[in-house]
Length: 230
Image 1 (cartoon, rainbow, N blue to C red):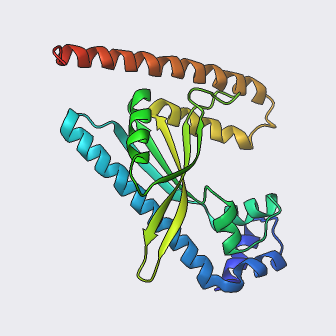
Image 2 (image 1 turned 90 degrees about the horizontal axis):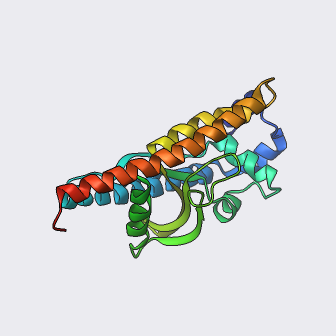
Image 3 (image 1 turned 90 degrees about the vertical axis):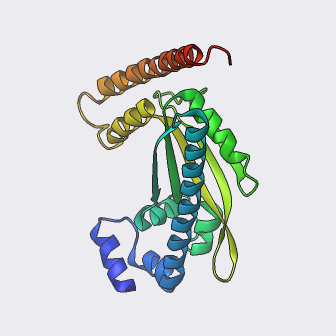
């Protein structure tokens, strides 16, 4: 199994040497157990958001969450990030130093839904918030907007309770669409018209942000018309 993993990563033009891969995969079962643990943490968090969405739908006759996406970072990406940060290539190093191995993305209908759902999620007594970055109120220079949170939750296995870190991102549909498009620019910055495209994307991000707020305002006005006595 180790040799197959090594051949796979080296076949992907990895910058990692055979010796580095040997060091990381010296205990393949432990590495596989770690990935399984992150998958379980994602399942726990997805369930929390699904329950919140069902409850809010029942109470308000509307689903604030449009979609939930999730992923565990690919092994090669984990290895390369450890190498980039000059960290030890080990499972314990991953657990201690990397916060985004497991990721959950919550796509909401409106900006105010993001803050409401995030607040309800973090109120749960088994969710520990380690870090928050609000790129909605403070967008990145390129126009990127999203609400990021690093949380730690307990995952219960047959023989132990294991705290696991997960990165949770909240976006509107428009923010997510923009981010998907912008992601492709990371690998095309040497194109002749790259600067023009980056400027256009920044302009689109600003337009999207204004549109998100306008749509939210329209929704609030519609809700007020539907429930005038509330």
